[in-house]
Image: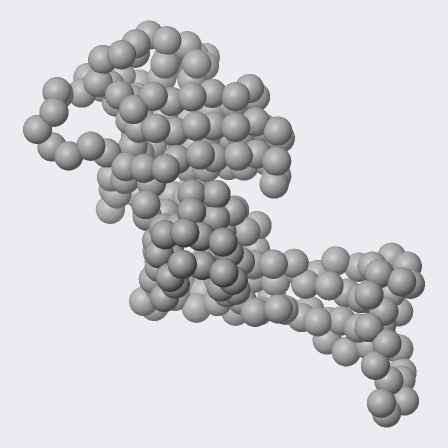
Length: 238
């Protein structure tokens, strides 16, 4: 089902529709669109390797293989709306330095950020990107499609003195939002990934160690998760 998000109410000027060409860049397509209401069809992965601003008059419609591939250190500012299937991958962010700004997208879907929900693929990165987007926006709604989302990764300390041996990465950490945060997921399950460590481990090698009763040195501690969903300092969350 195609979801339209961030689009202005009906009744405005009709949008012309145009598909981005096989070798055409997004920036070139935006230049041709000008200031007229336009719907740009994204038929393939588009590499974005420099900051780009997509104005309010331009909506993006993503076909099956269409997505924005945002390089490290690049910011995409999306003032217009998007049209895509709720289970479609449309935002391919290289890492935590790739930024998506889209204040008009109140509702987002983890699949848009690469989640699979197939009970096999580790969806931690997609969940982290969803949380980062909502936190940056200051609130919003996260809709999880029915499925099983495998989540959880751990970082090895590599040496003694860091206060942990294996530390869990945050998963869906929603914090500091000034507008309500809503997480919906009828039929959706978050499942901890197999192989996560819990107990006492050598912080250098990552191997389990035997300890005596009462041993509490945090440098040898491994936590599997800090919580699959963390709500910290938000105005309202449910």
